[in-house]
Each structure stands twice: as structure tokens, then as C-alpha cells.
Image 1 (tube, rainbow, N blue to C red):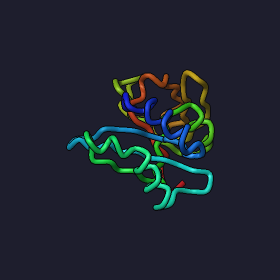
Image 2: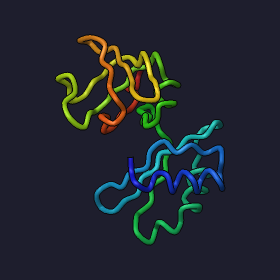
Image 3: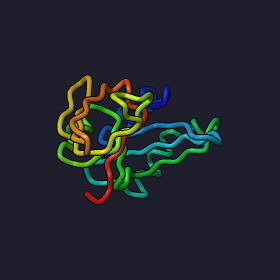
Image 4: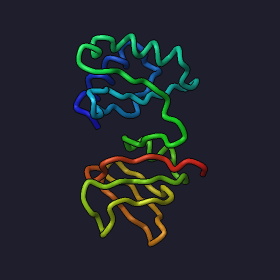
Length: 139
């Protein structure tokens, strides 16, 4: 998650409270990428509204705002809880229990860790060890 995440979340919470910021990342080429969600879905008009609210970031970055798509990023404990029973892929910062990434069914999530039923057994991963995580499409 980007260091800009709290700042952007606060700004959008004040101006567009129903918009949920799923992921903020700065990618090579100085692009600021946001994945957002909304209870009524993400439309082009909503992406344009969010882009307008973050217009001052265009001085430093090319700005991309989009919907999460089928491979929705999971970045907060409540995201994992919302999708219990779905398949996810979790990429780790360092090898954890012999894994570099774990794919399986989300079977548990607390404020400290997520639990996945992977092909080789149940794996519990502390959030600080997760580099990136997303739902696996098609399930």
C-alpha cells in the first residue's frame, strides 16, 4: 500500500463518503493508480469525479482511477472478511512457512492475520507479511 493511501482516503471520505478506496499504488513511470468501489458500482462518471477530487496529484503523477474488476485487490481486514469462502491469491513479502505466494479459499480473517485453505493445508498469514493480495476470478 502506498504512503499516499491515508491522505487520499481522508480526502475522498470528506468529499465522496460512499467511495471506498481499495488500493493506492505508485507504479513505474510516475503513475498514481487507484482502485475504488461504491455500493452502486463503479461508473465512468464516478471515476471522473474521483479524478477531479484528486486533480492536484496530476502535478506529480499520471492519474488512473478504475474499478476493482474480477481480480479485486484485498488490502484491509474487512476486505478479507467480506469475501470469506472465495478464492484469493496472496503474494508474500518474504517466504512464510515455505511459501512465496498462497492461493486458496479464504477461511478466516482477524485484525492481525488471514487464514487460507491452500492445496497443501491451512496457512495463516500475518497482514504485515502480505505484499499484495487479490481475489481469483472465476470462482
